[in-house]
Length: 112
Length: 111
Image (tube, rainbow over all chains, first blue to last red; front, top):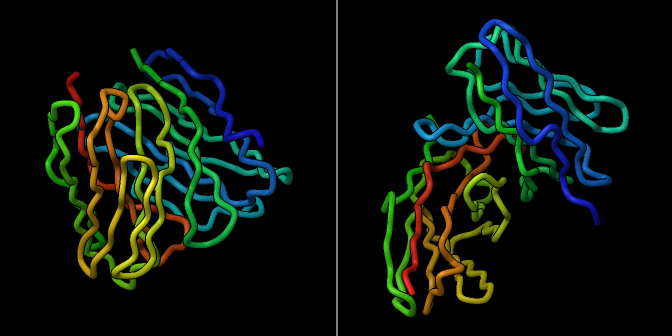
């Protein structure tokens, strides 16, 4: 059974640009969550999607957005990139409420 | 505010030297406590889920336990390949799918 797949693995962008990250969940999982991981803040929740609807959102500015498609694949977009957006962005998928989330390998975003 | 706190931040052990990692939480209506292992540059790898006080789960040299206020990850006779960051997390904020993570414990096992 294939795991959670994130693309690309690495990305370098310039301040002010925008970026789109992609996540394919485990087959059959309908919930997809996104997290930002930095050395100082650890893993922080960005948002969660279920059946193409955003159900939960963390405390991040509106520059961070996402969407989910009918096949449960999800994309995350960050506009007007700032240096502080450099981080490992992780996607996780779950099958049922309050059960374990399985993570992808992440996308390492560097903003220069 | 829901919080998950892990200690110590870093732990260095000799191969074979057993120890425990701590995860304390203040989450209203705990609906599960999850342990993950994370290697550098990779996503967290799921280890255990605990749902009720007194519950224990084991996997190889690792055993996770849960009380009403904290969880422990016991590592018995660790090997260098157990070196990683260990994270605990709990569903929080009234959401079934939003996880609040601790900052993790960086474990180094020296041969």
